[in-house]
Length: 164
Image (cartoon, rainbow, N blue to C red; front, side):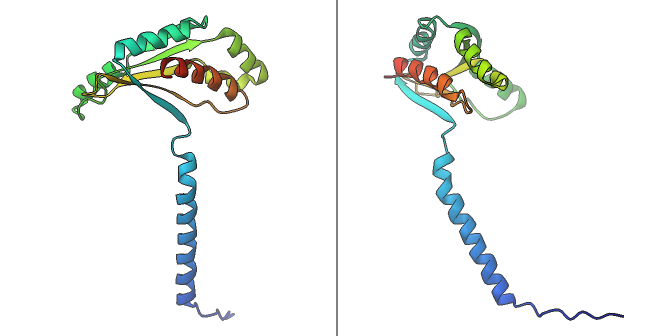
């Protein structure tokens, strides 16, 4: 039988190393969190009711010669499914997501990289929170990738027109 002596484990040094490693990881996560917290979305508050804000978004889209493909009634869906499933109360007073497209911009993006198809259609969310009928929010997911600037610029311009 072969015997291989092992060095005794220094439990104090192991504990100290583990604590230092945990503190380092915690510090890194804490420092990095603000950089990633809400960078993926853009939201802007508009002083006005839902109907007027929605109309301003539709006009801003259509005035650019863009076509609205679909309107998703997210607020209605959440109200309906929430009550059917016995889940919490109202999340939105009203909420819709407007999907639209730019043939020219989409073509540019997909010529640059056919995988950019996932960026289409473009969407803007319009919503008001319960009890705040004179305040509406408009927002979008910030696109990523090589063609992101093209789409982000369009969405930012529309948002700036609606909520200067």
